[in-house]
Length: 450
Image (cartoon, rainbow, N blue to C red; front, top):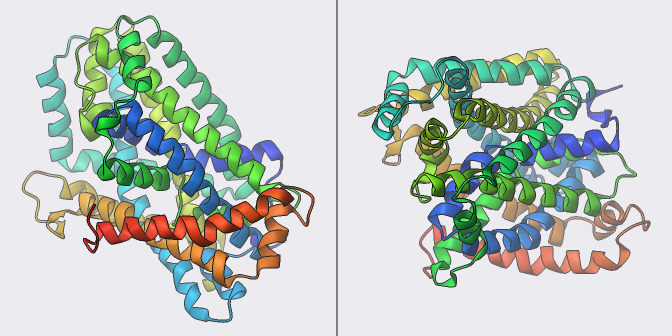
């Protein structure tokens, strides 16, 4: 059987793999600091609306492209359209996910290093300046985050080499339940902290004065990053979804799981932040600087530090396999390489990019792009430009250029499910989502200001 004809082995396996893709550092690392920096529950409300009204239709559309063709993102567009220029949209997604994997591996490497620290020395007895200086020293060493990133890339490669059912699906069936258990344990402990009520007020009492257009932009960007949209991941996983699987039901389940994990992560993190007087708007360093300080002061902090950073690692590795797979499938189908050769080739190239990203974060580094260090430049380029553009092209293609009957067959399973909801979905992807994404992109480029 050709690799592109392989399907997920079970419904739970499908759910575990796709959930593993969308539940990652976007939920555990990125969502808490964005919520903290954008007014807590005011941001959360906007984020939920963006996820359900924009991200869900886009994910369904990507699955349609993948399942209807059984091909990588590049070839899928080539198959569905007479105008071969659309294949460039698929290629954009593959390039995007390659870049993201490069700098994502560096962040994931931080999780490995902090997990090691939690096991060996722990965080007890360390004050804020000590934790901050240790983190800065770690970043400025260059070689430490580089080694951690290489280890992470190697682990990801080992899983993807195993293939779909015996590699990616098997590991996700183990790791996703572990992630849920650890997150629930951390949440239950957070309910015993004195700052729990303050955290719940922060997360559930919206201050709508905090909502502005930048809040909406942050929410849209987070929904794209978290749900792996506009980068070919969902098109690729769509090729492995069985014909009888209901796409609307699967996508809605994944969206609810993604939102739930992000919220529970907030429930687990912010009580400690409020209990020990930490600023909830700490930004990207919330997880890697602020939380070690929380663990240093709480009862049993070392144990919870170990659990938390293992949780971050699980979230990272389950997402990273979904980043590597689209590039691997592309090489296998377009260049006729074996899975092993494809994985090794991409891993070596990504490692080079990850090394550049790690060393660009050293103070005074000359590895810069667009006036930023390479890590931040690639993060901004993919988050604010490449993913939104990719998603916009995908949604325009499905809504205006793809065969409507083909789209209907995939969404409704040949008329068995979601018949009444199809027209609403089709209206949303033709008009609502393209308009919202166009305004989002025009604002990013400074053409329109709000």
